[in-house]
Image (cartoon, rainbow, N blue to C red; front, side, top):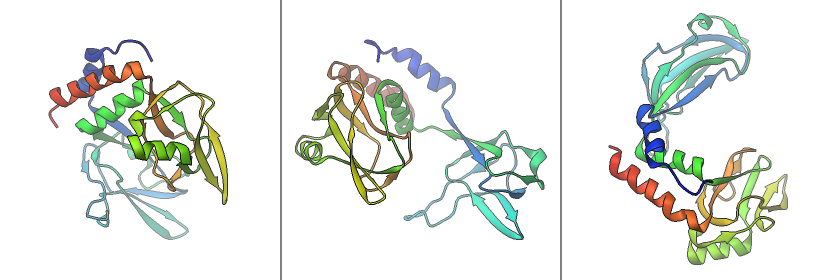
Length: 216
């Protein structure tokens, strides 16, 4: 992380393109029939328990067994592969992109992931803070807990076996926690974002400015 953060450059990037781009792929092999058009708005699942499905994106049929795929995020359909409509596709074929308008909270999270040191999950597994770290977090809060490279910070639970995970990265405070204890995390997904103590004030200035200047 650099010693300074260019507020204007960071904010200008998100003002110019305040979107996230989520590619949608074929879930498995089969014949695809699109349920959306280019430029159409789609909605994610809703309801108290997300029990109301999102907008229909496409139907894929394999061995006469149709499966409807719905949107997992709201946005606008772009880069729709219209030439694939009605065609047989392989699993993993890109079908479309959803252009998702970022909210203020999401912009702050994106900025943090750019400027913090992110420590990734070494394997797809369930993770917990080790007991000592967890006790310090419960007593003082994560942002008051400092960690250093070589310190045992996590316990990884995989195939009913618990393995200690040694932190390797920048020394600093645990600014952001991206996992929930006991919930499986994909390999490579960040577990925590770490910030050197002397950079906390700079990051807070960025967050404050986004809150002040962004509409929603």
